Each structure stands twice: as structure tokens, then as C-alpha cells.
Amino acid sequence: MLHTEPMQKVRVFSLDGDKPAVVAALHVMGVIDLRKSRLLIGDDHPAADATSISDALIKVTGALQLLQPHSIKQERHRDADRLIAEVGRLKVLNEIYDLGNERKLIEDDRKAVSHAERIASVFSDVEIDFGRTRSDHINYRAFETDAKGASRFVSAAGREKDMEIIVRKEQKKSFLVLVAYGKSRSIDEYLKGIKINELDLAGKYLEGSPASVIQTARKKREDNARRLSAISKTFADISSDYFSRLSNLKEMLGIELERSEVSGSFKRTDKTFVIEGWVQKRLVGELRERLTNVTDGRVHIDEIEGDELAPTHTRRPKILQPFDYLVSFYSVQRSDEIDPTWIFILSFPIFYGLMVTDVGYGIASLLLATFIIRRTDPEGLMYNAGRIWQINSFAAIFFGFLSNQYFGFQLPYSTPFSFDWLKNTPELIAITVIFGIIQVILGLGLGIYNSYNHGHKKIAYAKFTSILVVLFGTMAVAGAFFGAFNGIITEISGAIAVVSLLLTGVLSGSEATEITNLITHPLSYARLMGFGLGSVIIAFLIDMAFTPHFNGGVIGAFVFLVYLVIFIALHFLNMVLSIFEGIVQGVRLNFVEFFSKFYIGNGIRFKPFGYKRVYTKE
Image (cartoon, one colour):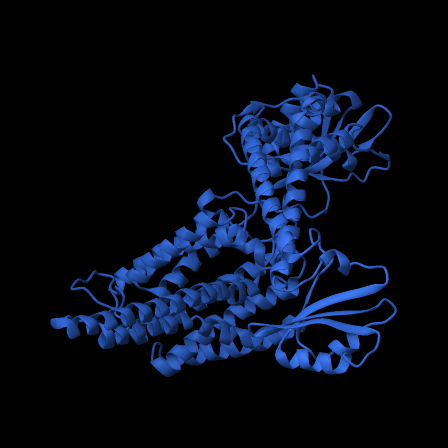
């Protein structure tokens, strides 16, 4: 339960002619995490058809991106040669790319048309031939500015003999300025410090008068719209006929490309090839049987022993796999250390439930989590966090029921395990601190196991004495300040705690600075009570001050609505704060206060050579 999946490294020998069958079988099984063999023989190379498969895949993928999604009919997998030949025969691929290129040109042309029309509209009441602004000897530049900018430019540039301001025309709140000057000089010095919007006079379709440009632009826009409509209809027809087929081809080509390239990680002799990798121990027999069948017995599999760190793989019900994702997001656990995920699965919802502790807030967080799950990528952080949030929401509902909290209101019922945040505060402080002491001691116990297994015996002993510090220190404090134990037990406990603390310092070495955490970390768990109590008090104050009451009349209705809006808004803010703190503090207590006692991390994630079919089948 507290260990990752046992792994076994294997070495596979087979004849070169059986390579396609062996690779396909491994790919289908998806059970081996491949590694480059350390045998002193030659390296293998990708299959000869890898480049052809890659080219075909790129061509099909690009075509699919231009089509509209359509229903997909499942097809059976075909070998690489047939797939490459099929792509070569598909003339529709060239048609798709031609249409895509034409659509891109039309889109670019539409931008040019819009630009020409805008420039022409600015010059609509100016006598100008845009064609004459393109000259081999004279530069023409136009810009819009405000009255101050126009005045500054005219007063500075107007004195120049080889420069002429052709147009200086006020348009609404801005000025249009058109200036002509020789090719050998520049006007940038006169534009410094002036807020301007320069107008590009060299655009396509800027020929003739503004009126003729506008007329040409409107006609061109209509032509482009008609052609784009025709292209869209053609794409729709092609999508209906070919989207399913091309989607299947893409998936099959992707699978074949992985198979053709993977042999680059193999070793080889003249007539044989060698594969190495990690397999789950429970699947070694199945792997041996499968490869024996596909090669008619022409295969040999060795189980390799050594001190190499195995990759980490966990088996857990699908509903709990997001917890593995979150732990690995923090750091992948090593395969040779204790796996803390089950403890995290049990403790995190309890922490969250205690800090949110309201049936209404729990239901609302459940709805929000479900919304996030339906809108995010199943492989991403937000999706996995949403799954964990869903589970935690049920804990919030459960603790809200025990504490009788419904958006701050209390209902007339009680259970044998009911508690009141305001009346049972001392007991809740004690419970949360005791919870912290138990989890810290558990973390130190796991640390003893990990440290001893990795040869760090002094650290293992130090963690044992740390347990004595926490355990007997708690007894001494409980006896001295709360009368939980008589004087003799209290004194003995205090003495053991002090001696253990000194031993911990001596044995810890460089980790001696962590001694203070033996006191602060158990106390950190009191935040469970603090944030939970804070949420309940704020909800109570909101209910007391802003619960809406309808007293009749128009004014009464208005006051009721105002109070209702405030009531909902404040409860929403309190809920968001409770949820945020529940998630952040729940993660912190596990990753900082608990994991720091034993967790090594920096493991290697198990990545089997395999694939996931969506549209096709074997």
C-alpha cells in the first residue's frame, strides 16, 4: 500500500527479421519503459521508412487542420507501406492545400481592400491621384495628428525649399497632412515629439482618386466574399467525405512513426537486435508469452539485476489518480522510497473539510469543481485539481453537517458526533494539534524507513529520537500546563524530551537546523481550527447583519433586494476565501509539515512505449 509498483528490468534478444513484429507487440502492450542498453555492441537505427511515414503524417495532419470536424467512423489498423501508398493516392490532399492557400491569399487581400478603403475615406474630399504618390524622385507621406502637432510640423517644415505641404486639412478633431519632399532627405526630425498616425500610401488598390478607390474596394470585397463562401462550401463537402478517413490515417501514421523511430534506442549485431527496459514485475510473464508467440519462439528475455534506480509507477483507482498527479507535480517519488500518496488521499480531504466546514459552501465548491472538469484538458493540472476538489467538497459537506453549518445558519438537529465551532473551540484546538502530532510522528517514522534503506543510519536514529522529542515533549506540556499527567510522569517525560532533543542535534549533523520544526510543525495544524472557525464566524456575522427580510411595500421590496444582493455577495467572498485557504493550507500541511520528514522525491516517471487509440482499432 505504501510502496510503488515493483519493477523489473529486462533485456530482449531477437532476430532482425522479427523486429517489426516485436516492436508492434511491445507497442500494443504498452508495458515497457525503454532504455538504451549498455552492451558494447553497435547501435541500431530507425527503420528505413521512417522519413516517408513522417512526410505522410505531416501532409495528413496539415490537411485535417483545414477541414471542419465531422463524425469519425472507426477503421482497422493498416501497415506502414499501405498507409504511405494510400496517402500518395489521395488527390484530395492537394485540393485541400490549394484551397487553403487560396483562402489565405483572399484573407490577405481583404486586409489590403480594407486598408485602401480606409485611406481613401480619409482623403474623400481631397483632390488626389494615389497613383502619382509613387515616384522615383519624390517621397510622399501622409499622417493624422492634432491641431498642435499639425501647427508644429507646418511651422518647422514649411520653411524648407525642397519640401512641400500639399494638404493640411482639418477633419473633425484631427488634421490630415500630406507632404512631398526629395528622395535624398528625411522629415523624421520634424516628426519628433508629435503624436501622429502615419497613413500608408503604398498599399494595394490605391490607384486613382479616392472615389474610384472606394468603388474598386467595394467590388473587390463582394468578389472575395463570394469566393470565400464557395471555398467554405467546398471545404464542408470535403470534410463530410474525408474527415473521418484522414483522422484515421493520422492516428495510424502516428502509431507507425513511433514504431519506425523507436529502434534508434536499440542495440544490434549483424543478425539480431537487443531491447532493454523496465516492466512491472507482475507483467514480465505476460510479456515473455506475448513475444514468444509473435516470434514463434525466436526470442530470449533476461531479467537484469543491478543498482539502477527503477522508474516509478503506481496503481490506483481512476478516481484517485489525480492525487498521484498532484504529488508528482510536487516531485515524483522514487521507486525505492515510501509512497505517501495514500496518506495524502486520506488527510487532504479532512483538512479541506475542516477549513470549509459548511454544507452550502461544500455544495457550491462541488458545482464549481464539476464545471472546471468539464471545461479543461484531462491531462492538465486544472482538470486533476478539479477532480481532487470534487472529492474534498464531499468532505466539506460532511463536516458542515456535523457542525450544523448551512451558509452560516444552523438547523434544529444534532448527532452523536456533532460539534459547535463557537462552543467547542478549546476541544477543536486540541484535536487539530493532536492530529498534527500524529501526522508528524508518522512522517518521522516513514523517514526512519527511507533513511535506513538508503544507508543513512545516523539520520534514521535522529528521526527516532525526534519522535521521542515530539511524543514526550507533548506529554510534558500536557502535564505541566493542563494537568493531564501527574508530576512524576510530567517530569520524566520532560527529561526524556530534553535528552532526545540533544541526541537529535548530535545525530542530525547538517539537518540539525530542522530541530525547531519538531515544535512548530505540530502546532501548524492548529490552522485547521483557525481557518474553520474564521469561516464560521464570518458566515454568522453576514447572516446576523444582512439576512434579508421582506416588510411589505415598494420600499420594503427594494430594501429586501439590496440586502439579498449584499448577503449573496458576502457569502460568495467568504466561500472563495474558505475554499482558497482549504486548498492551499491543506496542500501545505502535507507537502511541508508532513512530507519534509521523509520524502526524497526526484524519481523517474514510468513512461511505457505504448499509445492510446481514439479512432482506430487493431
